[in-house]
Amino acid sequence: MVGQQPGQGGPSEIFQPLAADDPTTIAGYRLAAKLGAGGMGKVYLSYTPGGRAVAIKVIRPEFGEDPEFRRRFAQEVKSAQRVQGLFTAPVIDADTDGAQPWLATAYVPGPSLADAVAAHGALPVETVLLLVAGMAEALHIIHGAGIVHRDLKPSNVLLAADGPRVIDFGIAYAADATSLTGSGVTIGTPSFMAPEQAAGRKVTAATDIFALGQVAAYAATGTPAFGEGTSHGVLYRIVHEEPDLTGVPERLRELVTRCLAKDPVARPSIADIIAICQSANAETVLRRPEDWLPAPITADITVRTAAPAPAQTPPPPTAAPAAAYSPTTPVSPTTPPPGYGPPATPQPPQHPMGQYPMAQHPMGPPAPTHAHAAYAPTQGPAGHMGGPTYPGYSVPPAQQPPKGGPGKQGILIALAAALVIGVAGGAYLVSRGEGDDTKGDSAAQGTPDSSASGDTGSKNPPAADSTPKDDPKADPKPSSYKGINLTAGYHLTLGEDPVRPQEGEDGGYELSYDTGGYLDAESTGGTLALLDPGQEGSLEACRADTRYTQNIYVDKLSQGRQVCVTTGTGHMGLVTVKGFSGEDSPSTYMTLDLTVWRNAVASGSGG
Image 1 (tube, rainbow, N blue to C red):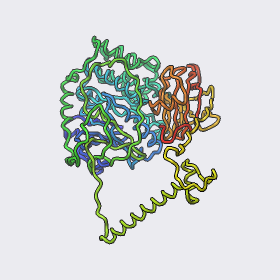
Image 2 (spheres, rainbow, N blue to C red):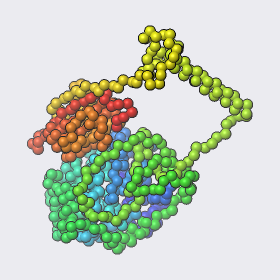
Image 3 (cartoon, rainbow, N blue to C red):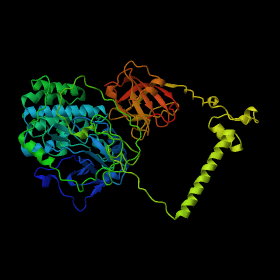
Image 4 (cartoon, helix red, strand yellow):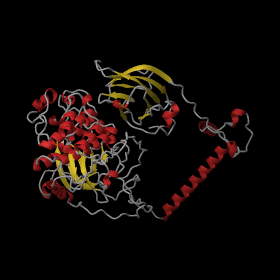
């Protein structure tokens, strides 16, 4: 899907007026202008109640009609809401179940790399080094959230005053297996695909590294590394031929060459890429000056900063702000003013996903980014991924006077009083153990039945400190399954006995080995938690660990590592990695031992 990629020109061309077939609001967001349109939908400009600009991306109806797209889109949005990096545009709101799915991201006032190069030509070497280093940091955060971008290209990289922003990560995966693309059409832009992606093979984080090298070559030369032309011709050259790097400056040659290795294993890591940028810059630390972009692109940013005003001035808050906004503290759920964003809904607990840290920030202290980067999106119930939450906004419920005259009101009061007396009387009977019904109630609530012990004549209620407590439920016995070979594209169901791999990776399964290269907990309420090396795996350890995630990339696992699995059906499991398939194996699989504690999730707990 197109990101925030308006064309070149003045404000009238960048911020296009809404056409007759454009909506005026999306879930309460009033639309101010259209930013662009592309293969997967349209992008509109809107505002939060506090006046921050956001980009609303509305998916095309034909994608929204595909149930597989909706399922994957919901999964990717959920993952994207965990991505909060300096060089990404955070997802702050979404609706994956509406008539037309949409998501809202922070608006970035800057041209895409594609627009900038088309209008002003290739970028200077120093700018390209800072661009690549920022994109590498963005991929570091994106991959840490378990996402492969799959469509990293110049139009998905925005140039802001304080650095690049990588957008639309994971969106290609949502469309990858829909009815629209299942007939052989490959998701992604041909000129910026990796060989394995073009050949329909396994896509991993290394796929994004190849695309990063292509973007670097494009930024430095103004043309794709494998040329232009028909899709089939470009894809053939990517798979079978070497790139044309004759125009790439010498200081960028090592970076681009290593990223464009045909073998994914031979490509550099994120840390290697940043080290290469540092070496090419002849500095130990990369520092991003305010004028890191050429002057013509900076002028484009100035034009985009002057976004049109919202359709209506946000009304003042109805109550004093409860707390000052802090970019380092979570925003508590509140209700935005009427007409701005969907109504607030109760939010279930969020499961934070740990991200693998870097020993030292590779780029030094970057320039401060706008406040949207600190938004902590929340996830609501099915049908809405959580409305934008803003401190200090609350709307009291409307006060409705009682209908009817005083006579009716008196009757209602009398009935209420009678109900209270009846409830109090029933509670008294229950406390005295009288009546046949109270025996059933007492048994259901774990209180003793006096008739069962023969003490039917006692009328004294038991003392407060002598009330028996519910017996704690004993821990279930573990079931162990050794040497399971879990092939990519297959899944396990912990409730089965014996647990055996079954075909399928995208069906709400409890534990699947996705062909994208990661373990996936798809069931509703299901979570994974990667235990630390040397940490002893046990039921107690899995219950105590709260580093929840939905997926874990296999390249983060090694022999002996353990993963706790919590299913939405109440089971817990411990996966112990025993090994992986060899390079000469005709299939990709991992060997694991599995311990299952069935019905081990305490009531009210779990993922």
